[in-house]
Each structure stands twice: as structure tokens, then as C-alpha cells.
Length: 150
Image 1: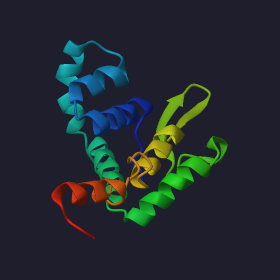
Image 2: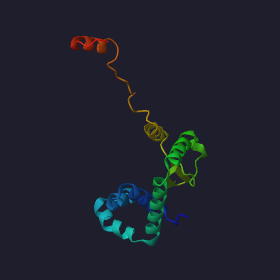
Image 3: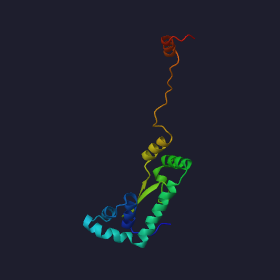
């Protein structure tokens, strides 16, 4: 269950979770200078609601990282197959939530990124394996040079 944060706090949490840089995250979320951000970022990290939200984001990331290979393949296939219009704030395919005047903007997990990762996991980027052999004419020529009779 997500902690109730204002939109800027949520944005701070999302950016901090991705970057680990509190000052930059605060500056981006609150649209302030780095000087102001530097003095306020660490105070934000001590806020109980923000700490809980960061714990939630870490837990979500850990849940994704503990997926089996089959679960990850299913997840990536779901990202690719699910229309963006069917993704809501509670969907596992919702990557980011931005609260704006007049509504909420959702960002879905990148379909192209999911395709690339799925292709990588399935080995589609690996070069084709070519069997090499010295059989046939070359082998016969070597045997002839060495004086070996068949």
C-alpha cells in the first residue's frame, strides 16, 4: 500500500529510487537550485512518509529482481502485449506516475526496452553457430601430403 505523498514528494522518491542522488532528485522534483536542494534533500530523506515510500519502491524492485526466468519472460511479453490504455496506476506495467493539474499522467514500461530485453534473454542477438570441419577434400589433401593411404 503506497504512502500518501504530495506529487512533488512522490516525484522526489521516484527520481531518488532510480538515481540514488538526493540533491539532484530534490532539485528536479521541486524545481529549485542545487544550493536549495542540497540543504533540503537530506531532510526529506528523514521524513517518515518518504522513507516508507522508498522502502515500498525498493520492495517492488526486489520483487521484480527475484523473478524466475520464466516469470521475467512472461512479464516482458505482458509489457509488449498490453495496450498503454489498459495500464493504470496499480498495473505492474506502470513505471511512473506524475500528478498534474487536471489529472494524472502515467508512464508505462518501455515496449521497445522490453522487446530488446526479451530478445537478449532468448539469445536472438547471439551470432549463429557455424560448424567447421576439416573433412572432405581438405582432409584427403592433408592425408595425401602426409603419405597416408586410405
